[in-house]
Image (cartoon, rainbow over all chains, first blue to last red; front, side, top):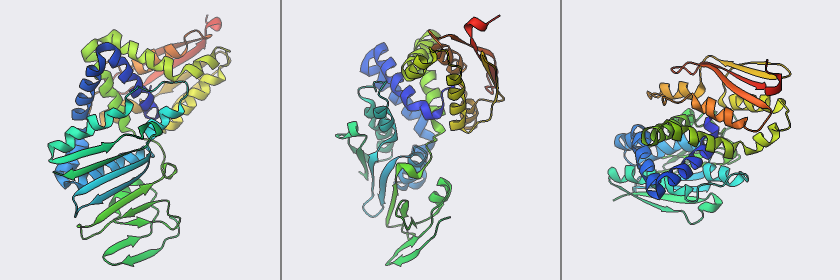
Length: 144
Length: 203
């Protein structure tokens, strides 16, 4: 059994495996497949039911369970939702595992998964991954 | 519940709670804690700002939905590249992730296997029966935590889900004095019996 606490290294190795099979395109194909399957009943459903506040609901659940170090702001007047990630649990875990080399573009999975979902509901998705090597990043989702 | 403090500032409503669960966090409009470790602000009028801040140490790391995500990854590899590729992927993962443990097992210390097994089920919060001797460890479980969560979410486990036991643990034992056998496995529940045995002690 692979514990859910060991999913991140399994996920990272999965990206490497798929890239060897079919290049970056294969990895992106998987992300697209996962986005549909994994987020339709959660993030997509919450946005459908609550609008932008659905983002707050979705990430309240996942980021707490993932024990992330973050600040999340929902400004309903500005129609803006923002996450400042101070220590991403996934990237942080991979950085700490000195015996494993993380997938070289590990952090690219986040926009690949989330962007299509929020755009489908009429929101824009912007991220800053410039410090993702330090397990830090930010995303802003706004009404288009 | 920790010591609380109550504020009322302009139209914002701050209630001091340190909820024990995420559920209570989500239903509470606003939380602010005296030590400032957990904060959630909200405007109950619905037209304001909601803020949530957390430190990594505020929560236990246990995101069970990752079982579902791993199942999707396995299905993707199985459906697009076949059985052998799925086993190859699981072997690649086990060789990379368990490299330090595999190295330690080469010394023949069976206590390393016990620690590994105990730790993995403890993290999942799952009860299993462990029987051990000088040369073996047997693990019996009535259900698999991964399969249980996947089915609870309305999904079906990958047809080769058993390989997360079989391939992963066989790979873990590569080039060590130990051998792993998945003695039985119920595909629907993940109930199974696993055996790690010292090769030289096999009858």
